[in-house]
Length: 166
Image (cartoon, rainbow, N blue to C red; front, top):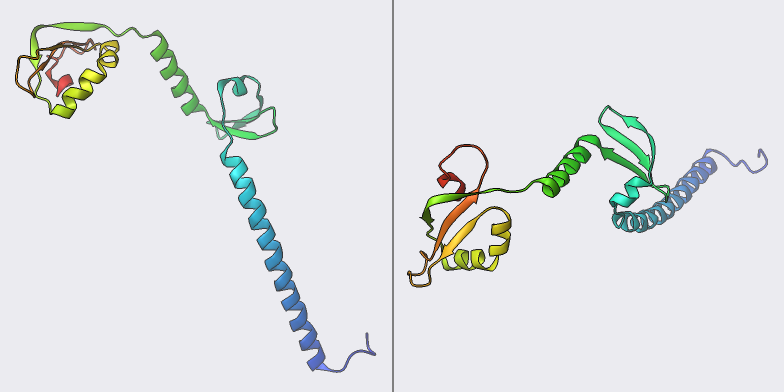
């Protein structure tokens, strides 16, 4: 080491060369990591979770009294929000078990709809009926006034029903 030492100037030059080499290798390494990260991000963005996956997960534990840590069969780590899982479960159960009752109106409630709104109701009549709405359609009336509501979903709220339509 002492034989190659020519003075402070050589130390500074070697230091600068080492810095530049480190910076170059750091840039190359960062570029490689960025490319790898982008590929990983693309792979991770396609991950999805279905109910069957949840059945086969192994639970690692609970975090912060509100999150379940679990691992799927492919060794992916999942953090499940307990509140959101409970909401989803209850929503799906209610959709499956709840029978929507309709309340027939004493007199039809006339609607004033734009042509596109009227078309939408007529096109999706089956969806409205599954959800407790019934309509009467009178082609003799002028446009915008052909539909009337004859039944509404029964909510048990005791209201007059007009607010549900407005």
